[in-house]
Image (cartoon, rainbow, N blue to C red; front, side):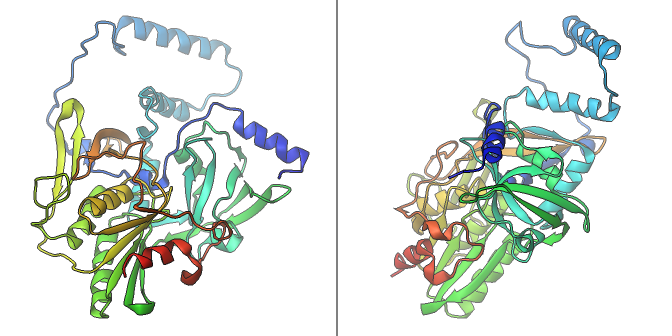
Length: 424
């Protein structure tokens, strides 16, 4: 219970702004294909508006209104104007007008940072953060092992109240906050959080560093149970996944557990590549009549954007299970839902996040980029998970006393132990 009056006041300030939806940091890695418009010389056909009243930024009305607003700003606005920021905000506004929290504009610097993170290395504090889709707060999902965030004392579930001079409100986009959290190696950032059970806010000074995040960790558990934890679907994840599966099989693993808890997503082709490594090319999923079908993405006008199928002529014939939770999103849900459709084993945990749409990142000629929602994905049975999520076969909530722990011993991890039971 919050006892401190100042604490209550600042929490009220945090929540007083109109609430917005959630966005996983893994979605920052585009969860889809990439495209570079600077290399695309051909003109693409444009969809003509069927509504005669559709907004046209080139119309005389729009130009006149823009000029009128700019004139008022130039004549009356009191503070100095940051011309670069003013220009960038114009492009931000184009994407904001889509009313889609997953579509946005990136400056050249932001785009380069995003691509750096997708490679598995970046500079920052080393923590996965997320936005709560119900109340708009941004919180720590999990600090990376041995990262500055872990060493400073940040814990899973900490709600971020302030980053440096930036006081957070619930209408702030996740990427905007992440931009303030990240920074050059050696620089410091002060992060203030609300932690349940504390009488006051907690402040941590974190020294940023170069973060190398191995997205796959694995080990052999008792009774020859192979355990593979996947934290994100980055470019280097597929090779690490194959290596983990092969090594555990070479150690005579009798079963495999895939842990996708707190995995916010990433590249679709990495998730389907991992599934391909497990599933026989000729297998047919429940609800499908196409051998080896893993995923279809359906875009504008119901056009099929991409079809992913098994094609590597490799499969794994072992008992398997998957563990997920509410922070398992996007590509994690592709993996989990397709795993269910092929009846590879039981899914254990809690209902996943519910992000079932695909974004592509298009690099612009000046080095900036836009990320745009282009399709919705459908797993082999025809199910979609957007705003619904994947329900586990066996629902198990993580014990409350474990939710704040950075490292949970396997023997006390009740979700993992339940998953292991399904392998007998």
